[in-house]
Length: 31
Image (cartoon, rainbow, N blue to C red; front, side, top):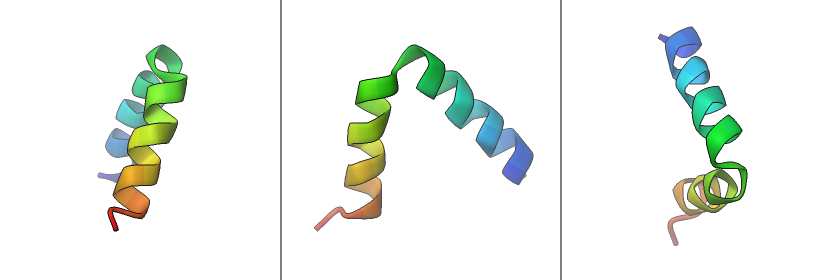
């Protein structure tokens, strides 16, 4: 499952680098 998830993350990162960082930040620190 990790491989599949990483693959999706990579695809998203490739198309949305900045937005991905923002989303990642929100997910890591929703507070």
